[in-house]
Length: 442
Image 1 (cartoon, rainbow, N blue to C red):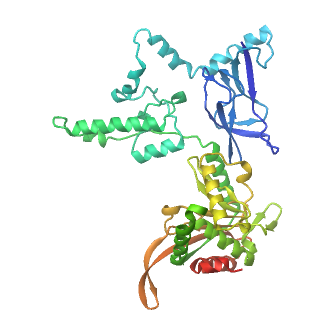
Image 2: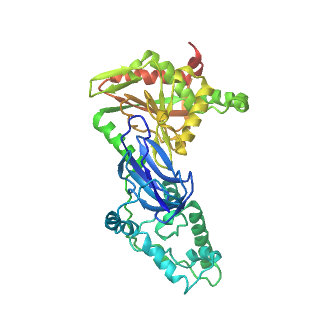
Image 3: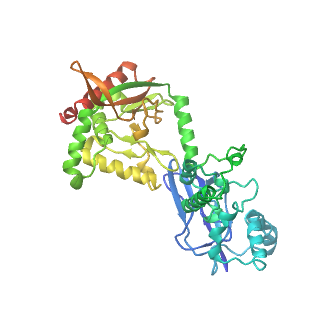
């Protein structure tokens, strides 16, 4: 047997260090070729590190949240054959020997206890799923549950305390299936309590005080988002301009286009139409399609319109870029926006797809509220925020009629964009969106 050391790879573009976001294995796990070992992050791009060999994990080279240099040791794997590490002198082996058990000490006690108890009380695999129904998960006091952001959000929506959910994933990670099983168990208990003779639910337990705390490290994408937001608010004096827009005709046009071309060309949403309006408007207002290098004191205006599309993912907010929106028709923009959003949501967006925007659109969709104050995507100087569309009574021609209304909440960098320029820019967007034929008049 030999040892194969995997070092932090060179991800490219002069990157000297990356952040270790998550491990998918732990000491003692068997791994196969091309199996994902860890996630690392540079800027906003998450990269999976696969295993080039088959073997058993001996030691991990860092903890989630650590910044690791390219070329540093990421993981050690025991393999059949010689491996890629030369044999160490006996003295060095003796000196290094205590470190391996220490690194695995956290994971070893639970596994050792299970192995020692197994001969005395064997448990068939089929009986294990029933264990959570009888008792809380075997989680040590103070031990925090491991779960992805998506699982945590779903548990919050279901009103489930993750501390009491047993995890079946690697290192006890809680999966969506574990949530489903726990929810079914709780429903069964509820039915039993309501059944004849079952008694009423325990009101004292339902309204008992709760004092649990959960410390969640701010690492990975969440840390990058925090840093970007802090930098944007620290550097940029924001001001927000809100305008009400009647999108009745725009929505009618969109419905007609989708009714006629959906099968052949795909679905049109509001965003491609707004992107087209921005493309036309920035010809008159190039001040807003720009980036400000405040360290050098230089504003760069662009003829190309690279629109950032703020996208919510399970890991946090990402901004993939619709490149050269000025050269795209509605369907090309719609298809590219959909592709970029999906790539961001499944963490497959390439680094080059997440940088280089010159102006950004942000939308909360149906949750868009009435007014927002969006944060500028530094070093850009403008961001256009979309609020939800609602049907409201509006006075038109002396009569009250129902109309589809939407607010645009747009923020600007007041150092380089004057208030009057920002207002005229938004009014230009309003004019085109309220009379959508003007979007296509050159």
